[in-house]
Length: 216
Picture: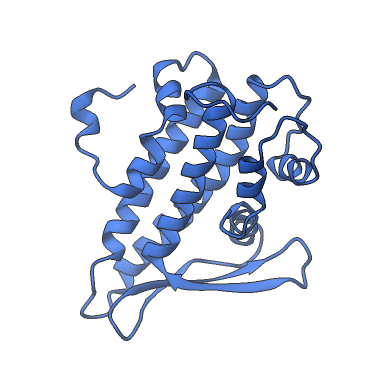
């Protein structure tokens, strides 16, 4: 658990998405189980990495500095790997608090939620994980494309001096392919928001907040 002085060194909206929520606070107060400790540090380090990326992505570069851009590319790939890992450990966390026989795969869990396999899942939760703003499938394919194929996160500077990233993303079907080409700050922020909202719903389900809307 961090003390107050350590927390004050880290500021910014992206970091707060990962760290200042009921689920992560509960983990920081009780890390007796290995998965809880791992999940806490995944959140914490994703928050640090994401905030660093976000802050640096807002700086306009006057000239091409390939080393600096490659540094951002490395950080972005690390951010992606942390995010993907968070989802797996979140499922383990849910299983610990659930009476349902949940699958080991977060992807399979989402499929069952979308197909109404769990009676107690709220409309809010199903709507969230079924919506176009929920980034798990994109993130899964992105991580797999970097880890198992030939994709890399390529940062570049556009005509306005803003930092963008470009990366090829392959789906489970090898014929499926798309290109992410967007401003780095936007990519970092939307991924953080997606996980933040998911943690809110999970916190409500297991009773970490006053409202209790999920019963899985």
